[in-house]
Image (cartoon, rainbow, N blue to C red; front, side, top):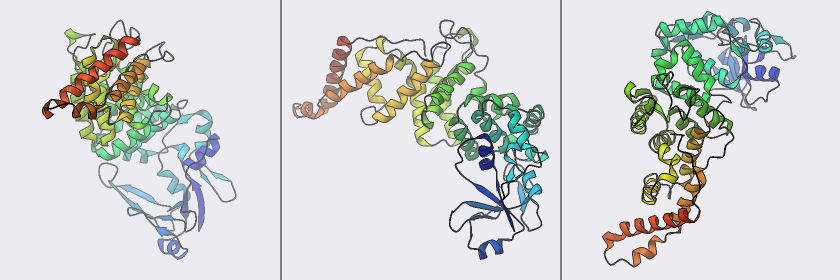
Length: 414
């Protein structure tokens, strides 16, 4: 029995990056032998075992054969006769198909070290084309390793996979899992650029694909279209290290612009309402977690008003704060402001300009908090009038705060 470190740990060590998880492949062993040595089996589709002390994963070397569509359409064979080279051949990219032996030597049958040096993402072999998840994984790696190019033959293979319909068999949960991980990488726009180049974006997220080529307002983005703007917004969310709900909301905030009638370009009237409808459809289709869905809906609905706060009447400001549940969910309202700030910064030359709307909204929310609803309620003989009286007091408080510190905010970010 031989044990080799494989995959991301070897790759990241060679790149000088921190190693988070270590995986191992075991050659020349059977499941029975692993169990006898104290390992605990956890894999159902193929034999994966946890080390009795470190709890790191050890997988038996295996080969796989395509038996159907999608990423589940495989049969696996893990027997002692499977070699390390055969196991590495089923991996996705050459940079992930490097193994390290116990003595520290590298086993690199598919020249992954050369591709690391050349900064190239390249598929190992024909097996890549049998699993559509690998398109998403490669796109995610492109977002992580932003200075890596993609081998032309790999792009051609992904395009062939899309034309062949493999991507259409991906299940929603797996698509969301990979998109979510890609959004959390250093430059998530590269993930979507790769998916668009191979044609997968139009199959998986046609609402995003439609944004490319859609004109922006001349006073907002004279140099870029809506699709480029959205990618800039998403990258801003990554550069500012925002959590996944903010990044997802940043991606979806302008979906309605993709359905603007030609006669209405480039102003996009009413795009917020259309965006809300499309965000709901996308989140339902991909089975997006509730926190990501709810924030994306809020940002799509209110980002225009958030940007235009100096133009809004105090009653409108109070209604937005109430309808967004800002009093009970201040942390989510901060995420709403964060996503809107990314929209503001996602334009050429505005990356480092302070977002002026955020302080005004925080002042307005503080004004709402200063209203003592309990005292107002005790002074009302008619209990049904309490909500209206509280609302009126909040409007008065916001009016006073904004009058004393007017502030300035840009309205170009909608």
